[in-house]
Image (cartoon, rainbow, N blue to C red; front, side, top):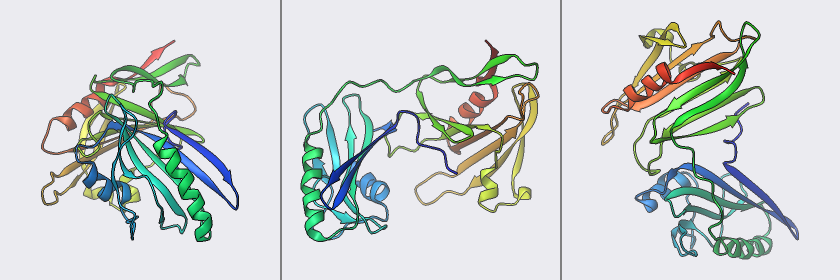
Length: 288
């Protein structure tokens, strides 16, 4: 089962309408508005959902300080068969980005047309409201844990000041992700920590045999272990990527609790070393 969206990152409203329903979903993206919104929107936001006909993405005029790019009127079929009534990237005054999507189910054209009109009014009614700043840098408690001696403690992570983080809660695990607060279309690495009882390596899901991986010694939470590392060759115009993972079950934690730490970063910069250092020295257990 996949993790739920990051805490506080998603809002969903269901609006009853005669013969159908409108679903409005807004998501925090933990990144800045793309520097080239047109290219990013077509290649990443739409992807395989390329609309046909008169529905085209464009710069949308909203009440300042908001700005937006995407599809704010009309509709197009989603690959599922349902209808996308709006698909919009929004920038707040601080440059941070959100994604708004409005959908309705597969219905006769006259029903979809009524839903389109309501969705358009929703998009153009958007206003900037109170906003909590994204978390930046510092030391954060990942989870509260019980140690093998029965004492309670905090599992903490200290991250560089230019990074932000999000938390995804699953049914019996939690995943924390950190990354630089940069435009959505910037090339940047990523770092994640899974805390739970049933970790699994990403490379194993991709069918990559263990003998194809490089082993690099590391020490995390006082434990000598190894990064399992794979290299992703560069594509034209893009750098190669290094992916590192490690799973450890610290003796100091009870109930078989495990950590799965995973890092991905371009090979041609300092970010791989910075994120590796974050894992090796930034994860700590602090007694309460």
